[in-house]
Length: 140
Image (cartoon, rainbow, N blue to C red):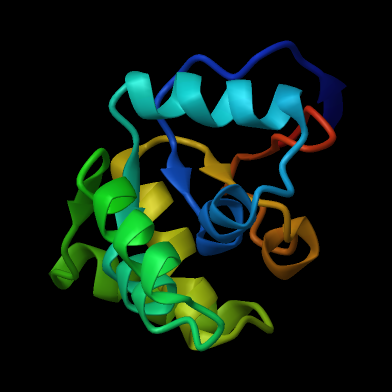
């Protein structure tokens, strides 16, 4: 169910695409405010997000340094057995790529929504709550 919402003020798992858009300066003012609120609320990333963000091929030396600084402001949830089991279940039951399954499993493990722009990548997982800061909608 999609519902309108104001600025996002709770903790979440932040997907890689949101951080890349932030570093590229393409988030709207409202989305930047939502990301800032999420970061201030003690949000998380998956280990996959660190790998994807720092491994992004389009980084300049300045943007890579900015990415490293940004990652210091968020807690990283390591890959462990419960996340692995959730990931396996998602892969067995839904058509989802491995990195996305790990990110989704991380959000489910942390019991927080996933902040992402790529809702279609995750929408088949009914037990995953998501928020898109660019459209300010949630999906439960």
